[in-house]
Length: 411
Image (tube, rainbow, N blue to C red):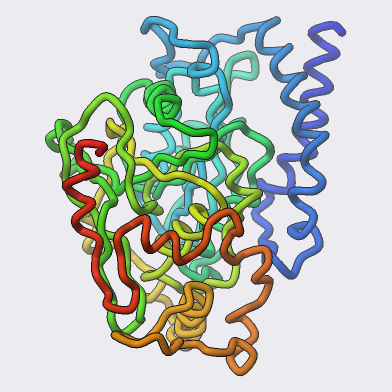
């Protein structure tokens, strides 16, 4: 096939796929036919598109647009530099999102392979999540805007952080790797090749890298000789389950085995989206989001490691940032239902008791147990084995902090 023929085929195919994610329309997940059939229908089209795109990229390497820092460093293994990465970004009224997008693409070694799925929960006064300079592009050069898929909802229509992660995942279109971040980060140079090389050093075929990212203060990076390891629990006694906790530990060459995942940074093979898809029935949930997703991944057979090097830096000083609880919505009763869903799925008990907090989901709101087969725990490992794995007694409510010392050195 000629270069022109390949280009036309790619344009038609990818145009059809991207339209769904770029028009700004919102589809409420599990109740919509398109969402139910998402994973079943994308396969053949995605494989064809990737083959065509690969042929086109090798046949005609277009120049990078101005400002890109791609590739004066020594070339790493082809898969490290070339495999596609889908990046999930949830932005809630965040003025830093355009900078995060620009940091991500301008500092990637191979920005062509980085695809963003942004759920933009902005009002008219909040501005756009995409850098304005990305809207103007040389038609004969690499255009960063081509790598960005966006769905837009008004802030009042948002349902909290789990809502954003679910909707963003709907824009996935068959990329090899999946990365989840927040919308206020700075990046290191060539972060895409660095994190993938780090990931490939972790043992096992079903592995994720995750941690609470190092912070930055007014754009200044902290000491990069330390990194957070997710190694202990912090019990929220009134909710009858813990939130994930972490401890600083020295960086090293290989990823760290650890107990939990974090929502602010997660990286792994994108097949995790099919095995443990993001749950659309956790509206307004905050505490419990990371724990439940951790246990769903682990019981589906995924092992959890912390990266041995930070590739991005999170802004933790957003004290005046707008949050979903600032919207004029009666979200608290809905949040309580989501918390009951976590309690039900994790079989939470009262303290120092084996009595279940939610003994029978049938007497609760139907959202407590809806689509449990799809969004519940896996069957590769058991919930009881998870608690043993992380050294936590869910009845006595121990915190597993002893692993912070042993896993610091990978023992």
